Length: 119
Ligand SMILES: [Mg+2]
Image (tube, rainbow, N blue to C red):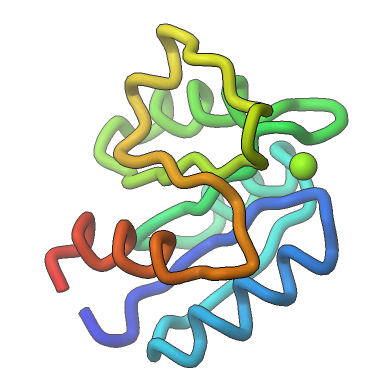
């Protein structure tokens, strides 16, 4: 799954661009969404091997988006990603496949993605 398709969902442009660059360097095919609704729309139109989902976003937050994504396709892998301290353990977050603290150092994110995709 070298050319795995990943959808990065984050309301902050600098994070979207950082993750895109870093994940493309790993050989992933990366698409971006800036909010939950845009992510759901992209998931409806195309297939993604994994979704990296920010939690704190205006409008539909990541937990709400996670529930909608899993309701539509319970097998869709989703990694929640949020700034340190933003994340409050919520029953519904348990349905995510992974969780990483947002950082400019993307090693943990990359490793989590690879583990889930079996790379
Ligand atoms: Mg955010």
